[in-house]
Length: 197
Image 1 (tube, rainbow, N blue to C red):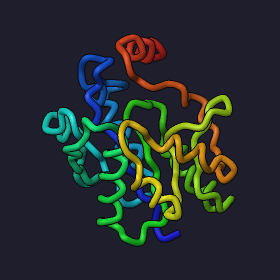
Image 2 (image 1 turned 90 degrees about the vertical axis):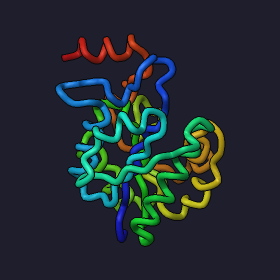
Image 3 (image 1 turned 180 degrees about the vertical axis):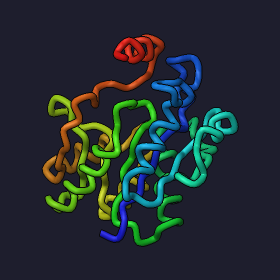
């Protein structure tokens, strides 16, 4: 494998939360900064952060030495536009990339170790898709081999890569992610996260 890049999807407007979830603090860091920090500790290159809503406000949360920020001006059309923008930016930076990991910034328990496990599992199994898994349910972060890139670039609307994973379910390897069900969409989610400390 020449390289596996990471695309961090952080363009949404957090309508259910009422304020940018990317800037919520957990253990002294914003969720966005935590996600970039964990991604940057891996061997993955490049790391692309896709911003959209509140981009000017959130860009300061990303260390330019760790990741490249791009702005998805089409973010209102749904997640697919961010997937496409992020993958195109990754391929521009590293045309020989063999794989991409898509991760979200609202999963506070994603670690360097989990991200590396996705890459290691792809090497070992040769499967074109490796997802995190909680209770036998696949989810993000997820790795896609370059053979899947054309399908990712055809996504549209508010669909992420879940439909592609379903289509190739017999070609999917998984990595256990015990806290993969924890993401921050609402005030209640955030309050529950803070109470876990």
